[in-house]
Length: 367
Image 1: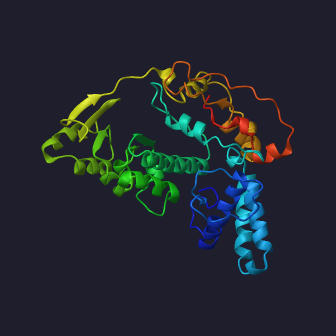
Image 2: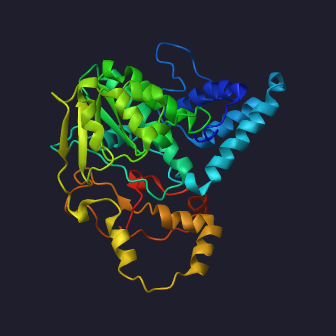
Image 3: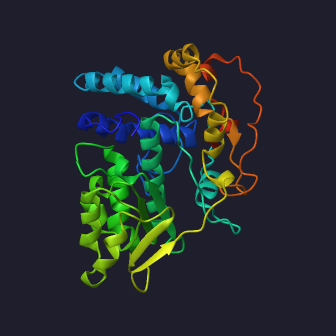
């Protein structure tokens, strides 16, 4: 997702990664084992959930380029190395390429993300507003693949609902648009997930721009106000003929009103969702702060400076400064709190490649 940014992949580079990543993972697991690994029942693959160091991967590429028999593969390896170094130096991906020192935190990370155990709080909300689109697409793709794999290997013991807001952004009707890895990961959940206990929920204001294959897999609908005739036609095609008259109110419904139909409800009904307090809605604090001072002038100089200085603006906009608390989530009264203070770092590597491992599990802050 990160190296090719959703574009068409190079088969030669993919094959090289599938050979080199297991060697880098083996170096992390067995630092004194050398560059070569023995094939056996416990052999690692590129998809095995074992961490590895980017430095070890680059070392493997350099060693492969130095071999006499790899002269024909040298341009491919050089291009692959350039991609990796470019991604590692990109400030938008600093949360991935944190430091030379890495830790195996898969148990803690998966437990916090998917609430295992949930302790009465089974919902995890990811607020990715303000993050670059490339980062959002990559995060969504990884989360979708993780959810499917966890449900698959738990043998039905872990039931997951993956709810995707603004779904038309990740699964557009036009196959030429969107981020291909995210589309494939979400489509896999929609088509096969129910067999393993992983379900997909899509939220969109534009059903006409959503992939028809995904819509055909949806069995329960909550249709809110829709003014576009094309979007209304899609909802009419999904509802039974005996209940089609209910959709006459589709363009005039009020806020929080919806028409529910499908397998999840006994009969087609018109309902109204409960109203949440404004302080529990994501991003409310930002909007209230902006509207409370309507007479203030916009500091255009500061805006342009943030646009030009990618490194500093990314640090401020993404603000990886609030530690995720497994017992706290969106919807709790004390959900929002001042960002935690972090001592300044003089490490040049940290400024180039990101934060130290102690800052793993951080969430971009919205206020």
